[in-house]
Length: 522
Image (cartoon, rainbow, N blue to C red; front, side, top):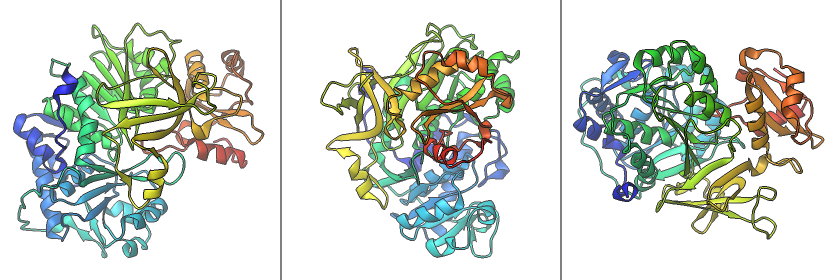
């Protein structure tokens, strides 16, 4: 089997771009933005030039005193240079700690003490607009990827920097720290080793080996997520040209897709929801897509249905991966054009043979079912090894070799895992809020988002956003909600005003807190 031929020797993040450049030196990367640490390259460059940027930046970090084992917190303006910086930090044996540009400065200040006097790599924009002067007290040293500040060291100003050789660390040594989505509070900081990162890489790399033709890959994912590392390296290792987008506005995306005609697209579920309108673009920006890949969350059947029918490839596939920041992908499912609009979107797939395992633990002593779901637990070599500064929180989610996902569901007799709800989002007596949201999406074409949250009185409250922020048609809503458990009248918000995580998930608990405290609809 292909899955068994990819051995886990640990991913060497610091020299990863050297290896892909050695295989495909003239392969190209195209951006919709400038690289903050190398704006002189423009927006189209080769993988060889990319590898040189990483080596140069690593040498600059070494010059200012960063050494093996040091932690470097990366919190800067959004851009593709973020994973390049992570590779540069790892190249000299230090540990990159990746914080989302979407985090507010106060949250960053609360998280920094967990790292214990790290280097902070940021930029002038973040210092001017997000971070208070307190950051200079909690960080050992503040380094700038771009811009200037009187109390920080601008790496771009260094001259005559001597190139340093890569530092090789053991495969069980921390090589990357990423934070969790933060849907339930201040994010936790998951520690990954070279071994655990490679474990996440293997199943996805095996799947891509089935694609024989060279395809352009388009990507819009969070640059601080561990997923971006595997997605980028898998694409470049195959010699696939790479298009990286920071802006997911449909009109912006369509312009690039029409010009470059990607064959593979990687994005988060909420971005795909925005891109449904591309199916109606007369230029057919999705016509050449053979594979849509979506990570970590179940996606609404309506979105899959519309996107697959917008491609003109003979047998396009929508691949869905379910997992979380702590575990990497643990189950997968693929969809084709044969999938109906009313298909069960709660079936998120089956484990990777020989790599991941899933079980559902009963909550009432009876076998878990749709009516009485159990706790979802998973086993994976890709699991993070601890939470930085919070080992007790990590231990609370472990059960031997099993990891509690914080979700509830059940498995069918065929082994498919059905995800019904987050534990913290359950509404007693309502059933699956996610399944109800799937049904509403399938029946209301103008819905851009719907989130069902618990109200103060225990009733389910649907919070909706519409395409173009048009007023919700209440008659159509009532018809679509027919047959669902009773709900309060819908509350309409603008999509942009909903609280989002770095991976575009809705922060359901925060949304419920705002609405139940009397916060007005936006």
